[in-house]
Amino acid sequence: MRKEDKLLGLREEILTKKSEQTPIEQFQNTTIRPILKYQHTILIVFFNSNIHVQYIVSANSSLLKKQNQLKLFTSKQLAFRAQLLGMVTGLFTEAEFEFYLSEKVNLDKRIANMILDRFYSTLV
Image (cartoon, rainbow, N blue to C red; front, top):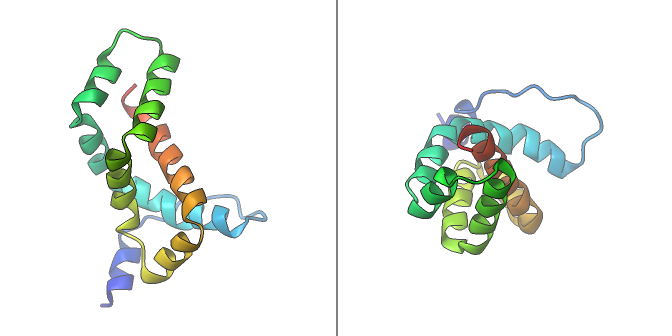
């Protein structure tokens, strides 16, 4: 079995509306969402392992304040953000990675926001 087939075999299909989608939206729905679902537990464990994140989540603040602090933290801590992105991009096929590189700035923002949304719903 080829490496590409193994990577694709790890992903569950996530049903989405088959309306007109831009290539980036299609990539998000067919590649990023299944990878995030697959990596969810690992992302949460990694997130919880950071002492700054533990402090933010345990603080006696409003939900909105915690969300804003987490967003600020992930935007300022570039190494932390890079590791999160690496946990997703490491499961791309070669063709997917080439597409990712062509739209890196846009996709990095999307991936980071999608990861944060998962953290918000799970941790905060």
